[in-house]
Length: 199
Image (cartoon, rainbow, N blue to C red; front, side):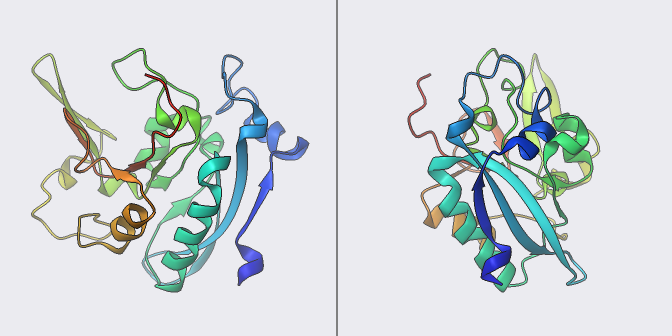
């Protein structure tokens, strides 16, 4: 199993898949600071699937350990595909419940580079763990098909809360969680670090 969980540099073949998509022309992050991560994961039926992420080099080993432990515990993650398979469209990826990491983009409704743009944030089962924010007195839920999962008192598959193994593993590795650690919004899918980022 260990051979299925591995980290590699961004070679020509991988770069060809992300060039102009998640790795946009104006991305300030050098390729040498990114890593490709191959993992295995289980879906709700217990089927073993292959997964791919691109992340910052400084969290690559931590993510490898987290996903190895999630797989060993049969923790369900529906999809882990490079967001480039969705043309780096975050909404499309979330709507399809795809878990992902690196994507150079800006924080919604701001001009700040997202931590995803540095490869320092991971979204897990995003359809069932939506992003919720009020903008100009209007509630925003992303993805836009996730309204059924806004109420966190309900029980449903793939739900992340503070009793969840995914939460426990990420926070044990020093990650913050968007369901608790963001001041003006909730982002239940979102685990992140801010190491070395100047705001």
